[in-house]
Image (cartoon, rainbow, N blue to C red; front, side):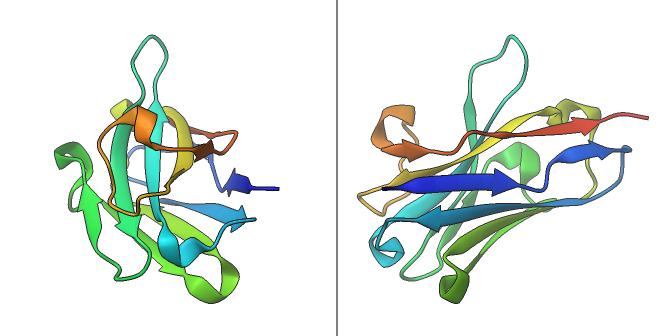
Length: 124
């Protein structure tokens, strides 16, 4: 059974930091890319970062570049999203998802498994 489980969300003040985790089970992770998406109220879900597991190549949405860092721990089958200099517009539910082609697709429909999401709220 495939599971992606996000954790680490919460309430943080503007300028603060959070680290999200995506624990993956039931997949041979080396064959995949793992992406982070987010969805704010009333907005479409958007892909913000992705990592190709076998070679560590990373991608970022322009609005988070320089503030967010995606990384992986192969031994723990876990992907992380370190978020710094958080802004109120980063408030959203954050999801991790697996791309079975391992290429960090920019299409929502390319991802086969999704986590349940974790809420991130940036507010003073």
